[in-house]
Image 1: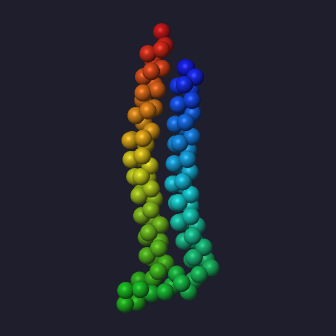
Image 2: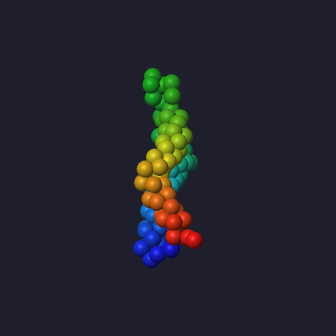
Image 3: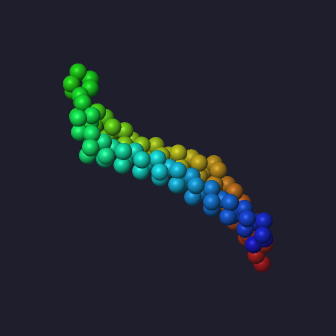
Length: 99
């Protein structure tokens, strides 16, 4: 592999880890924020909404559950449009160079 291809591969790998790290941090913040609210903010989590039919904790729990597939979809869309095409190009270039 040529030096410029290695540099491009390293940049792609760094970008992939950066995007994955940011999305993971968002998910962890949402999850642990919810857990800390339930553990230490019972009065807030127990506050009733919608004519006393549903609590803040239930709404936030549903939001945490919904965040996971949303973040997954964001990652898949990013990977399909930003990561996979350059990676495929690097692979095809490498196959062309091999005897």
